[in-house]
Length: 249
Figure 1 (tube, rainbow, N blue to C red):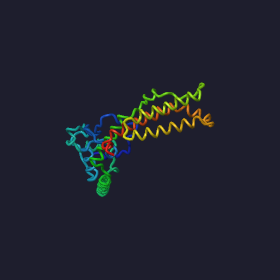
Figure 2 (cartoon, rainbow, N blue to C red):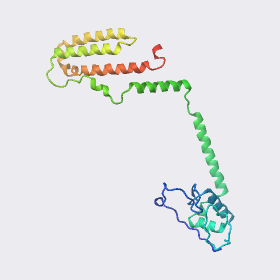
Figure 3 (cartoon, rainbow, N blue to C red):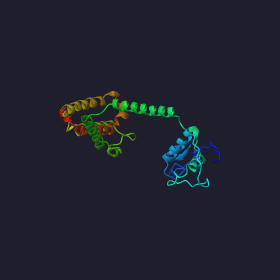
Figure 4 (cartoon, one colour):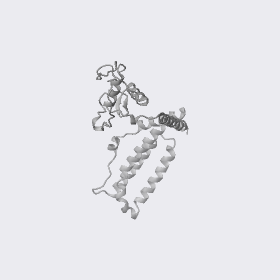
């Protein structure tokens, strides 16, 4: 048998197509990955390792140019080993027994550490998981990501002549509508309406003061803000009613 020359060629990233089927470069069987610098199956990987560790010397019983396939790869070890070297397998990539054991120990240690971290991770009990599921469901049912309802709000008044009395009347009506629409079904509706009545009286008194002219621009936003607040409160109440046990609080 002629002396064999070990090649140091390495398959570049541009030469390897990850989408192509993985075929063993030695026998054509299904490959499991790169082994000793070449794409091979598990059988040829083990054969190359054993041959290099034993420093085996094989002789081809035929012409020395056997075609190695999955079915006949055991028939001619010499041509099989020659094929391994021809496709770029390198003995320098073979680990010693100590290195193999060290690698196994590192893998085992890493798995044990991961298992320990997983065991220490907090877990939700059934009750906590049920509550979270209810909250998420309530959120999805009451939250409108498109904000389509906002188109129904009265737009803010930013321009055009508006008399103080007309603005005050519109603003008071907005607060009144907000209070009645938002809290009709709330357990604290009576107290809330009384508070809103006091707020309306304070606003009406303040609007007639000499300094009220400085607030004209701010008050022109009140109808729009009243709609926004009313809508937000209704959504919060609807969300709260869907929470288990909230009505008993």
